[in-house]
Length: 228
Image: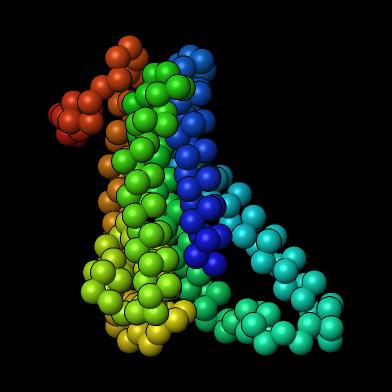
């Protein structure tokens, strides 16, 4: 599940920024902003990508569960059985952390993509976000491989919105976590997603109309707060 979350969030998150930069570099954005608000366009791209990513997860896991049940009598391996006997509440937590984790990263990818004028610059621009997500993934993987899920790094990452979708989900799946810890983690993640979504929408609204040299993030934020 962790690998699935990692691949889907990274793949579709980068797709959001690439689509935005592509529309901007081809000047299609100038036509689109005349018929729709930039904020609505960004939220539309993010939600569409989220639905696509979630559909892919459902298709992959749904197919695996279906064929497992068809061939259940012939599969006596205890490891395989343990994989498909996952409690329903774990799937619910996976959906919650997937949706919130995807949104928070997709908003950032969309905001960064709006500040890029050339498509070839997109990989360099989104690299800090990608590194942040990869670091979160590595912390989780190393913790699982070491057998110490409740180490200090995981405890801290469980409450940081950029790392909690994977860190807290892993602790829930492989350890015993108090209900209030889960509630705090989800509440922080929801609040951060809303805040980053609002800020990203403002950056998007300014960034889609900026052409020429790639603006610095500080300049974009200064323009955003000045217009606010």
